[in-house]
Image 1 (cartoon, rainbow, N blue to C red):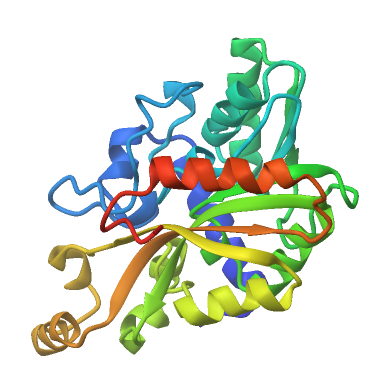
Image 2 (spheres, rainbow, N blue to C red):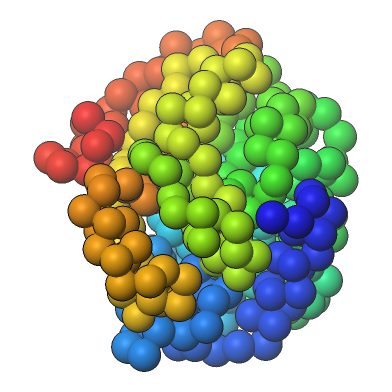
Amino acid sequence: MSNDQELKNIVKAQYAQIATQEKTTNAASCCGATTPSNKVYNIMMEDYSETKGYVEAADLGLGCGLPTQFAKIKKGDTVIDLGSGAGNDCFVARHETGPEGKVIGIDFTPAMVQKARRNAEKMGYNNVEFREGDIDNMPVNEEVADVVVSNCVLNLVPNKEKVIREIFRVLKPGGHFSISDIVLMGVLPEALKEDAEMYAGCVAGAIQKDSYLQHIKQAGFQNIRLQKEKSISIPEDILGKYLRPEELMAFNQGGTGIYSITVYAEKPGATDESKKTRFSTQQAASCQEGTGCC
């Protein structure tokens, strides 16, 4: 696999192309970035269309969860969205913060930032801004955000520990995050792990679920909770590009799991007991059997 900077350049080039594509094209591929399957598979994306604040023009079909659904955003909050793309999660977050809040989207692909800014201007959202920059070195001062959200992005960054430390830095004491991402249980075949296209497609850059959660704990976060988990299946016509038939059979029978998870965690410092009560109430209302959040 390439070095960290080369990986970033690969991802940036892929997502610059995606910024000009239609959602239907992105939905036909693995997280929008790989060559489309010969059938339209909504492999990772979730349906936002019924979500309040949803802006269709900003939905490129690139997410793997609905982190804003679990993020406990309140009126007046400052929210940061990591890897904001065309702005979809920012606009959903803006609905929750109201005009009295503020939403900052960060993306390192200039074409995405430009697209998001155009979308915000069309909607007249003066309290939503988009900044160009790396999420492992955010163009944001410390202790700015009440909430951080992200949707299928950390797996695209080579140094995930650094991103998590950055999240800790920009959150206010008592602030929290809700992040949807791709993780693994088991080992990917080398052909998938070493392929740049699969890295940009949100698969090869994913790490073990236990390691992911451990990084969050080591950064100093507390009250870490898995809010949602679902299995991701990559269609065989995509896997067939990388694996011989016998390798494909072994992979399908080997027990390796690719999962979309939504993780919640808090930065220490909260003194408001009602915050914990709100989470418990929301968790009880949103948890359903089989989602992995209970």
